[in-house]
Image 1 (cartoon, helix red, strand yellow):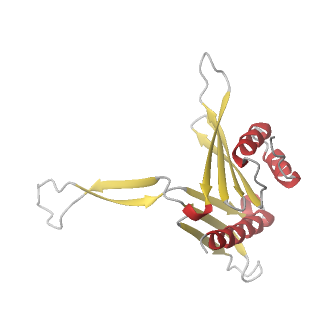
Image 2 (image 1 turned 120 degrees about the vertical axis):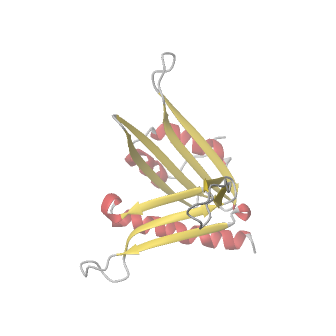
Image 3 (image 1 turned 90 degrees about the horizontal axis):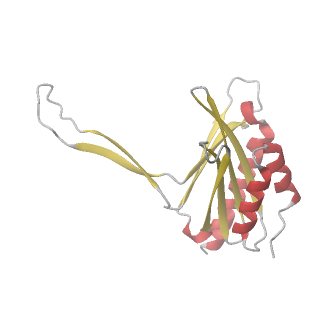
Length: 191
């Protein structure tokens, strides 16, 4: 039996407006009967030259898993003039290795002190890594040797940015609430 998504999650998918039925279908399949405890729906629009591309990331917390669904426009071709690709990852809470929260506070005196104007929520479960390489150089400006490459390897699982200017202060509060519930669930799963 396919689980029914909570009304609040369905409403957020409809408000995001990017293939809400497709997102709901992907989430329902991934939930596998689990009840969502919390969710975060993040639409994003990017501009690639003359093309506008829309994306949607939905993060759902259950008692035992974090479900991340991402929907993207798929480039059209002669056989498929319009497609959307939905990718879902189902991560056991005990596999989450780190969370991060970057908070930006207004200091111009117009906002209430201690109120976040923007946050970035990071979640890592060692599912993917990003490597940034650059040529290694020495301090001798006349050196002609090839010193190879140097770089950094960093987790690159999920980072979601929410801004009160772009999304409204309620979206920032919702993201902070989701972060708090996620941290509590991770702690409970690892206890």
